[in-house]
Every structure is written in C-alpha cells, then in structure tokens.
Length: 149
Length: 259
Image (cartoon, rainbow over all chains, first blue to last red; front, side, top):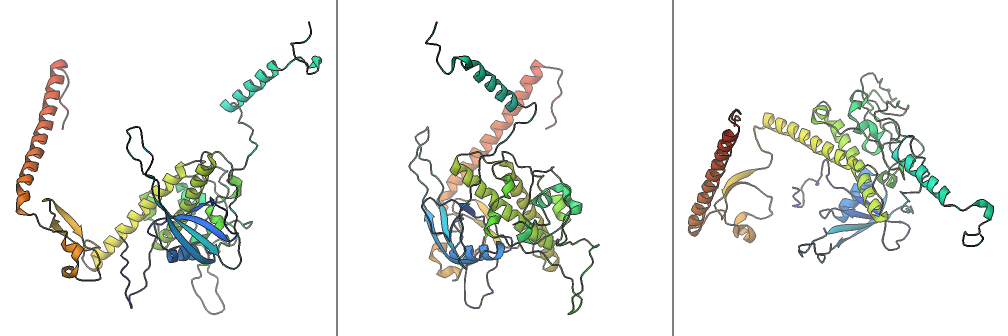
C-alpha cells in the first residue's frame, strides 16, 4: 500500500525497493526517433516514470506522456463467457539531449549447427538423405522422367 | 558497451557465487555472456568495486574515507535488453534463484542493491517476453522470470523480518501498519487495516457507508451459516470414518493411518 496523501510540508514521498516493472515495447505505429514506448503498471504516473528512468537507468528523460489502453472484453471462451484482456498503461518517453533510440532486432537468424548425437542432427541427416533420393538422375540434365523411354 | 562490467548477472543471480559475491551499483550489475558454464568464476576487472575486507581503501588527498566507489554504467536503455551475444539464442543459461537463507547473510546495503539488480533483470526479461510474443517466437529460457520473481519475494521477506525485529526492539509495536479487529455487515470478524485519509472519519461519507457492525436482521442468516458449516464438517468426518472402515474391511491387515 502506498498512500499518496500529499500535503504541503510533508517529507518527500520516497519508495524503497519499488516493485514496478517497465516493459519496453516495439511501437505499433511509427514514432519519432527520440520516443521510447513502455508498458507501465497502472499505478505509475508520468513523474514516477521520469524519476524511475533517471535514477535507476540513468537515462536523460525529457517529457513523458501516458495513456491507458483498454483490454478488450469482447472475446468469448468455449463456455460463451466473456474473457477480459487486462488493461495496461502505455508511456511515451521522449529522451532529452537529442538522443535517439530504435528498437533493435532481438531475434536475428543465427546459423546453428546441431549438437553431435542429438535429435536435430539425426532429423537433418534424414531430411538430407530423403532429398537426395528424390532428386532425378543428374545425367538427364534437368529433364523429367516423363520424357524418354 | 564494450567495457564489460565486473559483475556478471550470473554472479548476482547464481547462488553458488556467495563467497565471490561482489557488489556493484544497481546500474552496473548487467550480466554479460551467460553462454559459459553455469557458475563461471569470472575474474573481476580492475575497476570493480569490492566489499571484501581484503580490499585496501584508497586514501584521497582530502582525507581518509571509506570509498566504496562503483563504476557507473553508461548504458541506459541498453539495460532493457540482454547482451547482444544472447540475441537469437534458443537457451540462455542462468543460475539458481537466491534463497532466503543466503539473503539473510547479506547486509542491508547489499540487499538494497540486489533488489535493483533483480528489478532491472526482470524488466529485461519482460521486454524480451513481449518482443517474443510480438515476433511470434519462443522466448529463450522463460524460467529466468520465475527465478527472479522468487528471489525478489524472498528478499522482501528478509527485509520485512529485519524491519519487524527492529520495530519490536525499538518501539514494541508488533505491526507496522495500525489496524483493529472489526466486524463487517455479514457478521465476519476480520483484521481491518487502517488507511490514511485527509479528513476525519466522521466527515468521510464513503467510510460511513461501510458499517462496521452487524444489523439485527442478519443474525438468523449467521445462524444458518453456522449450521451449514457444522453440517459440512460432520459430513466430512463421517466420510473419512466410513472410508477407513471400508478399507479395513477389504484389507484387514492394514493399520489405520495416524490422523
């Protein structure tokens, strides 16, 4: 419970060990170069996001704008009950000092040789053998079996 | 980015690392290539902060001070992603989660820093999970998320224990947040935890609508509830006895379980 009674003269609200987690997401729509998109918990505010990023991640933050995304309640399950997708808050953070950010490609295609003696290796060998068997006689020069004697 | 930090994430997350646990600032504890063995004994680089007693304190010109300097991480938003060597891997190795027993040996500053390490790790994993859903690819090693969560929960319990003990010793208060036993409208007695309001309770309309007493017309319903509860309890006990009797009849040699 974090009580947010804010009155003049109170000590500044501080949270030790914040249990708020931000998720950096790839923007659905095209965003300007300096804008980073986050999914934040509903209880966070713009100032919370700014302080969070500045203090914990050392990121110079300019402006933060937030909105709440409504999760659809339209889908129905096999019992015809409505299933609610959770709501979430989205924060658009603009970086200060002219910094830019592009969302990187985290799942690049990697050449991986399967481990020795593993299932993948056996499967790949089998597939290669099958393909070799299906190939036509190379001496026929690409002509199918339909022609000829 | 190129300057690798001293403390790999595997150090902070892997429990085998207790005796070589080096604390770095919250911003610095990014894990580097985890592709090596589970509990690698990576050596510390020169700039790493060390809290072990063997570290000799550098004496500044201004005077002697306990300089626990930590290398500041210059990587901002990159902390939301894994190290680039792990991008595209199917499995990323990670150590065991922290147990409460190990966490109790750590000092408060260490726990505070560890919390932020775990926080950043969890942020990274959540980012990865969301991106994997977006690209419709499997997230590599999702069990890391659960390990981090468990570590954080245990850390929280340890910190709460310490705060509890301190409060008991200093003030004699058992609970940090004041509360009282109250009866609600339905006749249930429960521990109501006080909430902080800006106005007194007699001016608070929503609070007054809550009614911490049971009206007279609810009492017959409470009686019916008690009757149901007793009936169900009797039914369960009878069922157990009948089951046991039936088993005894079929297998006369078995001994009744002690329950």
